[in-house]
Structure formats: structure tokens, C-alpha cells
View 1: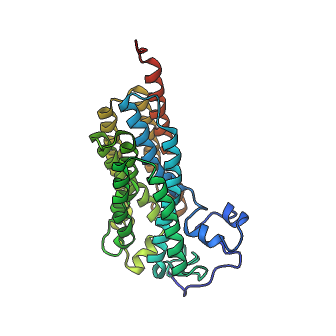
View 2: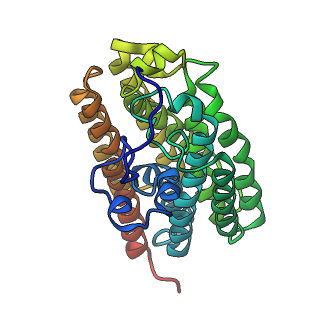
View 3: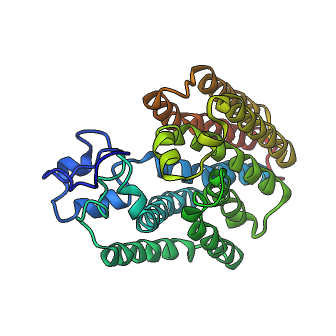
Length: 323
């Protein structure tokens, strides 16, 4: 943290987005700040929000003896993840606008840079939330109520860094909600396997967001904000490792509870190996590396999902034909 907040460059780019991203290259100047509020230039966020939904959809298909997850549900979860992650990021930028103005990585974001007003951001957030509601209304009544119940957790998350050294736990509760929704969309209820999968997703989120938080630990310390990166400091590797071990164990129990087969376990093994690779590479002093490892969780998600889908398909193919 150093100089006073500055206006963004004439191009309207933001410092914490990849140079030459599609938003900067393709969108008109008037639309660019809104895409940046929603982080459309950084898909990692909606991948991480979507994975619990897709994993649950694939796991409940195994439990129900279906050949694979409902493709329509997967499409809905994709759209929902994009818009609700965008709405959440917009809300985060509204509540954190004064903090963002003091941090080098975030002071060029649309609100602190003066390119979008708080009122405009609130309207944009509401529009995204309405799209998310339209997606949610495609599911059964139990799932609709379950999805709406997540709003409170999402709303309080931005304030947690002001009062606790573990705000990532609240982020995990919010970002993992899709594990419950993805299951209930098929089952009409939340069974034990879904709750255990949810717990594993919470631990996974705490782990990967600790990686992410190491980019801002110096600024956060100067401003007086809390994060697990600051709480654990040079002991972050064993903390993240503990989170990832808890994730793997919870996922294993969820697979067992759902009656998953060999290929699902192979997918989990590959997922666990990827998490172990992250810990082996981790260096809490290297912010660029922390960001790279954080982003690599997209690949980890694909590994686990592929195992779940393959297991469901093989189980269905090998099932005896109905008389």
C-alpha cells in the first residue's frame, strides 16, 4: 500500500487481470467496466463455483444408477455459476471499494477507479441476480428454497475479513453450496453423501483461497484485514495441506456413501495427486506462483469430474438389461 488511489489507464484495463484478455480486446469501452465487475475476464472464479455443482450432479447420478449427470442441469449450473459469481464479485467490490482503493492489485477496479458508480454497480448486481433466479426456478421446489438460503452467506462474506483471520471459511460455505444444490436437483433432498461432499468442498475452498490470499498479505496486514494467509504465514503449507487432506477424506467418504465404483476412485486419486503437487510447489513468498497454483484447481476439478462421469457411464453399460 502506498500512494493515493489513482484513476485507471485510458484503456480501462485492471491491474489484476491478464494482459490482453478478451474483455479488454473485444468489448466496447462502455461495457468493459461491468464485465470487469463480474470478472468475466477471469473464468477461474466461475469454474471454482461450478465444480461442486457438477461433482454433485455426477455423484447423485451414480447413487441413482443413472448413466451420467443430467446435461440440462450441467448447462444450468454453468450459467448460474457465471452470473452468480459475477453478482458476488460485484457485491464484493461495492462493499470493499474503500479497501480496494488502498491495494495496488485492486485500486484500478471499476469502482475505486471511478468508472462505475455504486448505484450503477448495484443495478448491475441485481440484473445478474435475476438471471441466477431464473436459472434456479428451473429446479424443484426444495432446490429453489435451498438455493435461496445461500444468499445470506454470500452477503456477509465480504465483511468477514474485517472481523476474523479465517474469512476463507465463510467463502467456503458460500462457494460450496452447489454441492447441496446439485444433489437436490435430482434427489429432491440432501442425503448424507451430499453433506459430506459439501464439507470436502468447504475444506478445498479454504485451501485454494489461502493460496490466492498470499498475493495480498502485505497490503492486508497494513490495512488491518484478516486472512488465512496472514494467520498462518510461513506455516501456510501445512495448513493448506491439512485442508486438502480433509477434502480428500471427505470426498472418499462421499464416494463410499454413494456407492461409487473404481473409476470414481481413480478420479479422486488423480485429484489428490494434483493437490499434493500444489503443496510441493507452494512458496508463500512468490505471489505469482501462488496465483498459478490457485488457478490450477480448474484442472483438479476436471480430473475428479471425469472420474465420476466415467464411473457412471461404465456402471450403466455393465448393468443387466431390464427383463
